[in-house]
Image (cartoon, rainbow, N blue to C red; front, side, top):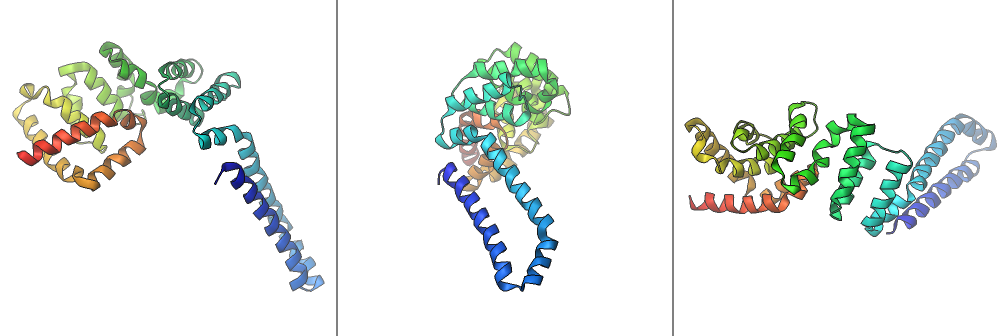
Length: 267
């Protein structure tokens, strides 16, 4: 059902419900009782009406947003978000997060870079929440020196949201120096991060200590049971729903999972 239809149907149902309650009270109750009923209920009714009005105001204010989402018109949505963020000064976390997702869906990396610049200049406090996602264009360009420089401050800050991804990006860019970070990440919570960390560690297997190699094998064993079959796909789907980085790297994660399970089944 289209957004406009839902909006009008909702308001019609609310109005009809109010009319029904109002008229029914006078038909069912005696006149004095009805007057007393409304004397006690008017404040609750007023609060209800104000809540509905506030909800309608929110939908009307964001009418274009919901329309573009419904139509999946991502270029138009991106233009609308940029207008809200830059021209109208609505630089907030929800709009910024939606802009990142929308820009990446149409492969507009420049829009993400522009947002990063705006946030650093106007609201640097948002970097701890959005910094990992804002760095995706840097990661995709594979300039490892730039990747390390970008993600290092985020990896060092314990307040960074989804710091595990920042640590992984820094470790990936750091080569053999990132082994210690990767050894921590293979025991983390996110299966995508764990898989990708295992893949990178395999490149430095000859440089690992015996204890590190043993830990690597233990992690492989535990991940094998987690990632098999449809249950494993659901686990990775939850990972993708949890952070945009897992979506961007989903092809790589799926490839690593396929190789990982194939190796496990033959060993």
